[in-house]
Amino acid sequence: MIMQERLYVTEDRQTAVREGDKRAAFLLIGKGQEVLEVIAKQYGIVDGRLKQKKKTANKQAEKPANKSGLVINRKEKNNG
Image 1 (tube, rainbow, N blue to C red):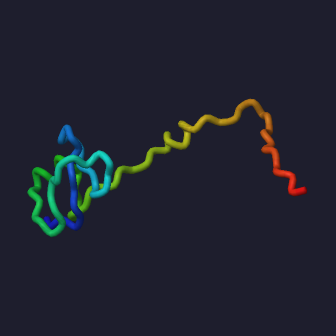
Image 2 (cartoon, rainbow, N blue to C red; image 1 turned 180 degrees about the vertical axis):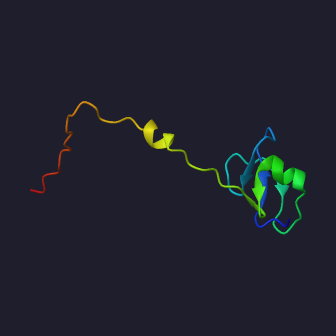
Image 3 (tube, one colour; image 1 turned 135 degrees about the vertical axis):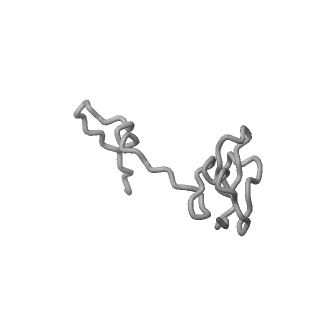
C-alpha cells in the first residue's frame, strides 16, 4: 500500500498522527512510500491514510446542561 499522506508517531511511539499535529515527534512514513501491512495494522492505516476515529455519541452527553431552568441574559451595550 502506498501512503497518501505523511504520518508521524508520538514521543512514546504508540500513536500515529497526521502532519501538523502538536503531538508529532518522529516521522513514521512519508507520502508516496510503501507501508508494510504490519505497520498499517499497528497504527490504523487504511488505503494509505490514517483511519479516522469515529466520534462517539458520548461526546454530546459530556457537555453539562443548564438544569436550573434559569435563563441567563447578557447585558447589551447601550448605544447612547
